[in-house]
Image 1 (cartoon, helix red, strand yellow):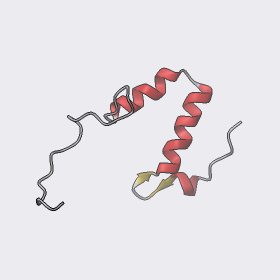
Image 2 (cartoon, rainbow, N blue to C red):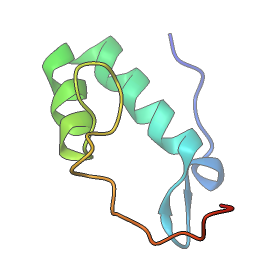
Image 3 (cartoon, helix red, strand yellow):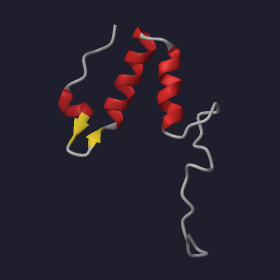
Image 4 (cartoon, rainbow, N blue to C red):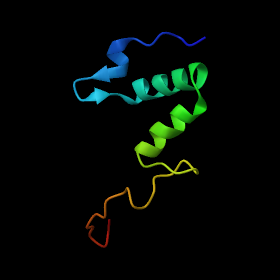
Length: 66
């Protein structure tokens, strides 16, 4: 059984926190079909290797020493 997450830890003024993200996915894994977790992760740009797809990461201009 999951430990109850305090809402102040899971959400802030900007939206879902990392703690909230982990809590939701733990619920998805425990309570629902595993496909739900993969659907959400793919929506956020992750592939089967749990890495962000290259197309999802914006190209940033950097100085040579960065």
